[in-house]
Amino acid sequence: MKARVTVTLKSGILDPQGKAIEGALKSLGVDGVASVRQGKVFDIELAGADRAKAEAALKDAADKLLANTVIENYRVELL
Image 1 (tube, rainbow, N blue to C red):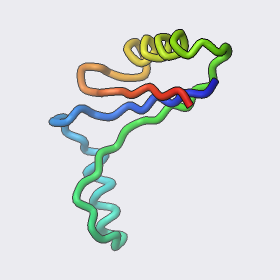
Image 2: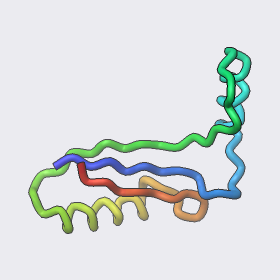
Image 3: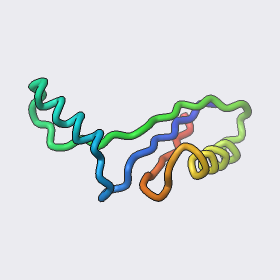
C-alpha cells in the first residue's frame, strides 16, 4: 500500500524559505506570484492491506517524527 504524508507550516508561522522562493520566482520573471509557503512530502510504501491500521501508524509517525506539531500541520493520504 502506498501513502503520502504532507507536512506544512501552520498559518501565522513565518516561512523564510517560502519568502526566498517567492523572491526567486519573481526575479525569474514568473508573473502573478502572490506568496509561497513551502513544506515536505513523504511518499511511503507499507506492507499489508489494513487501511485503518496503516493510517493510524502513519499518524503516529507524523506526530512523533515527520512533523513538529507545534508549528506544522500534516495530512495523511492512502493512495
